[in-house]
Image 1 (cartoon, helix red, strand yellow):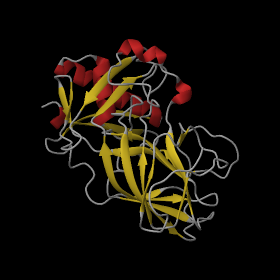
Image 2: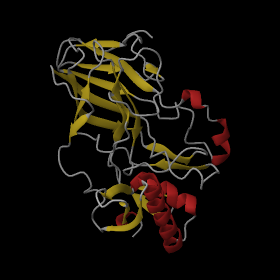
Image 3: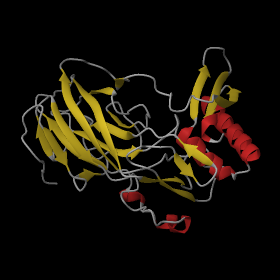
Length: 322
């Protein structure tokens, strides 16, 4: 990987990292594509989480061609001068420039209910990249959009290549939908220069991303990178600029629950209950309901103290289907 950027590398000046400067997995031996001073603004072009394989022309019949060695590319890494283990990298998410299209899929063997949904499914989304008006799911639903990056992270201290699929102490594929414009994210630095990368941008996602995919959509993301010396945080922390669900709250929610001694089984029960409810009430297929749950419904732990049983709830916004 060779370095490429536009403009000065002085703090406060903008740089662009083009989408071909990407990598698969975390590795602290990767050569940085850009070196910046703290306070620098960087625009990162991203590829969707399929690695550019899925296109607007794809149908479900094409899903068998998906090469999993190419999924979840991240743009970077960026070396931040002065970053040392024990510091925190403060990432201010300034803006997202969406592409206007995306996809959601049920991928066999992946997702919370993989044992129930064994056949592939695919929805190609088109949306207005300027207005970000709710995106239509066929003729049955209109999903409010909230662009964010699913994968934001730093290189880990451990040597070697590490999968990008699971999130880590240093961030990574966290899939937290509140990594939207205006959020300030703090990531623990484990290697010199931090080695920051970003990818897996989404136009919308519910908390839990239960089918394993959101509205996967390539975007350009502008961030500001600052250092907090000696922060010594153990895991990522973030601050949102304001309310996080107002795009979904307007008409309230339908909620299903799962209750028992195992949180994972409770989560599965809550989501299964919502799929049944949506399929019966709105005359849609179970897999359509599953994908809708993934892009706009929220999985929550409602109670985790009344042993031996815990309560998990799944909130589905009525504004989507009313």
